[in-house]
Length: 224
Image 1 (cartoon, rainbow, N blue to C red):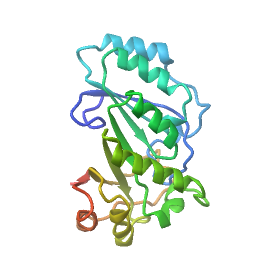
Image 2 (cartoon, rainbow, N blue to C red):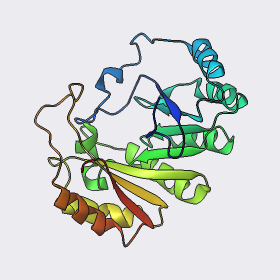
Image 3 (cartoon, rainbow, N blue to C red):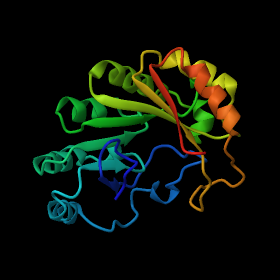
Image 4 (tube, rainbow, N blue to C red):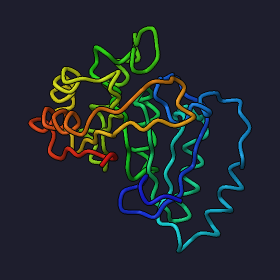
């Protein structure tokens, strides 16, 4: 259960395994591989959600990368039939799958990661290069801005990966976005790389100010 993952809703979070990125600051690194055993199947999840009708106000899907799951639209449709609003977290690398669930009305809110400025994306995603992935992320970004769905862009800010130049580039890149969150990195045992730290509060506020000329609503999430 979460009060944070789905804005304005008392929700439960569903974690799906499998991700095409290897971000060094990932909080859910134990979910990167698709072959790890799950703690429940679809029918058990639906049974759980039926039992919480009137208590829960939404369902948030995160990962890993939820859009890697082939059967996700069918599962979302069954959850919508139960009357639950759905929030989806995504890294933006699967624009066709994103468009599919949005245009079918299967999600109500999308949170898309903006890992860094385009120039530093590969480094931040733990990949040797982005290649065509960067075009896919651009497509997802542009789709959300024009789609009419409720959404947010967000960046988990890591001192070793982000600086003022990052946000000076991110601002114009996401110009016209509805809302953007700078999330303060917090270290956990599941983070795959040791030694990563959060920027100072002063740096976080300075980074937010660099984006504000381009985005209507810019906020800092976490930290103080």
